[in-house]
Amino acid sequence: MIETSDSVSFKRLKWQCRRGMLELDVLLEPFLDDVYLTLVEEDKQRFHKLLACEDQDIFPWFMQKETPDDPELARIVNFILNRVQPESDQA
Image (cartoon, rainbow, N blue to C red; front, side, top):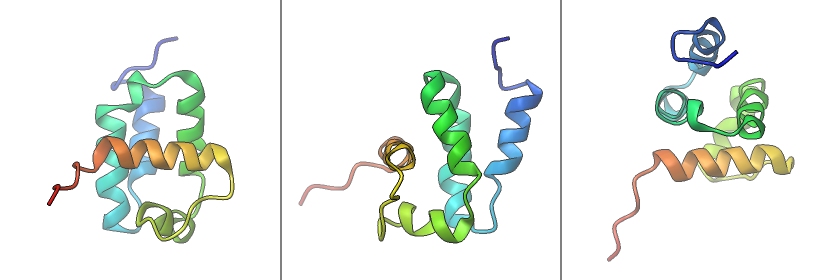
């Protein structure tokens, strides 16, 4: 079955993207809305794995203070950061 933005599984993911921290919400929700459905299955699974992590673990990853030990999580965190963060201004 092909996943769509109207599917139950997508709506569950949308709910899981709503975290306890606004800083995470503004990264995860736009990524889900704009990119998730275009991901290959392996990256979708990495995203699911990321959503299973606790906010206090993923917050420093997205603030680029720490890097996940798990290479699968590191890949999806970097992918999300590269997709949703605007390119920095070059001085």
